[in-house]
Length: 150
Image 1 (cartoon, rainbow, N blue to C red):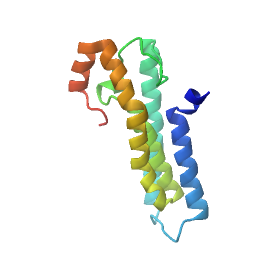
Image 2: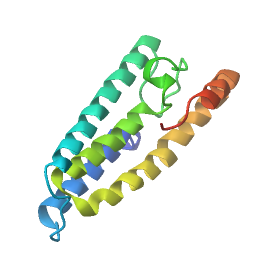
Image 3: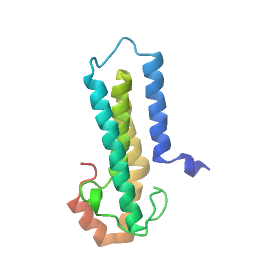
Image 4: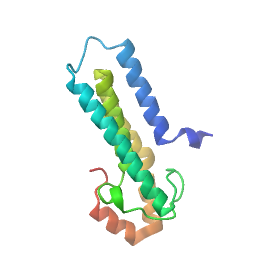
């Protein structure tokens, strides 16, 4: 049961809940001001959703698992994965940042680097270690060619 709770969407949902509560109950008179935040927030959320869809399509094409704690049967390097090794985690950060902007949750901006830290420590590094052990030289070439984030 605990393994299913320790998944990136759960961490994202927790951060989103905190941001929403902060914006709703403790805005402290702070604001991003203007419609630019709504536009930027919408673009970030939309871009994040597109990244998730592109990444999921690559996993499906490769017939490997998208679940972080499971062993991959293939090294996914095509499509969006030729630009970033972690498009889904990048999408999580974009969605969080976008909704923080849209909800005008100024104090919750701190959740973006905090979520980045959690995702990197709990998921990215262990996943890359598993891929490194399983795909050895192929993963080394891929990691050398494609950056972790952008």
